[in-house]
Image (cartoon, rainbow, N blue to C red; front, side, top):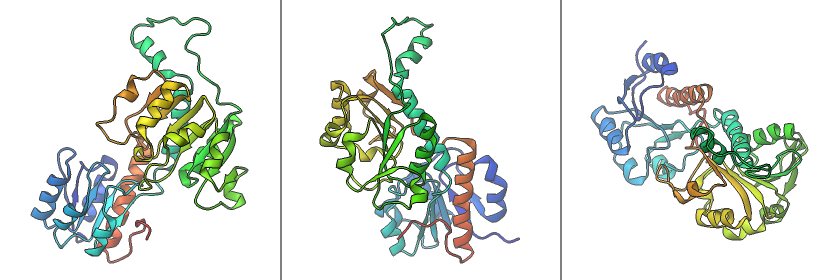
Length: 320
């Protein structure tokens, strides 16, 4: 079988999909993760037909302008695509493909992990165990809060938001949601819709952001102030959605009981003041970091490349 073209990777080919990739394409694989500059050099040198990247490899207008004319698709192994200038790519006739179906379960699970970790002030307890159980709390020291019976507000009721709603029913949580459009009763599954984000906030003892990126800052100082005092805040979506300085002040003042975060405005060079607070539970953007999810993401990215280089539409394109 003849190869469909040359595919340049920004990361080593994931083991579970290596045989498939090598059967379909002439693969150009780096020994380790590379950045945009090295990817462009490899794409030009090898007259790439496609590039496969991760969110850590921005493809903005200046980078897309330097891709060889042979490139037909930029495939990103991610749901988000705010690291790619889609309009510029399409103006050059380059398709952009994502992996929207591959991350739902892993990211929803991570959201629950953030809720649990933050609600129980896990950071201090883990540090105590790392220091040979150096701190023995008194009966009313280091206490967290229950999730059971709380009211959860979900901002963005797409696949991941609905996955979170499904999971928290085990905690008997009352689910509210704000979305661009109201869902059908079947998809709502008993959740209460708020057309106004600001009107929902005063009811949210727990707030979870599950929006895509590219929407600007949605959690401002004013909106943190609209939450009930002592609310729990969780973000597994995008760090760019949050005014981090306002969040820090809300955590210091007690307006927020705690925050669980998997994403930050700047990654990996995030604002370390967040980690200095005792009431934060932080993860290094591992929302999709399971064997199953990453394997499916890699395969979906290859699906996009295979289709486009075969003259077919990408199955997972960025929506128009």
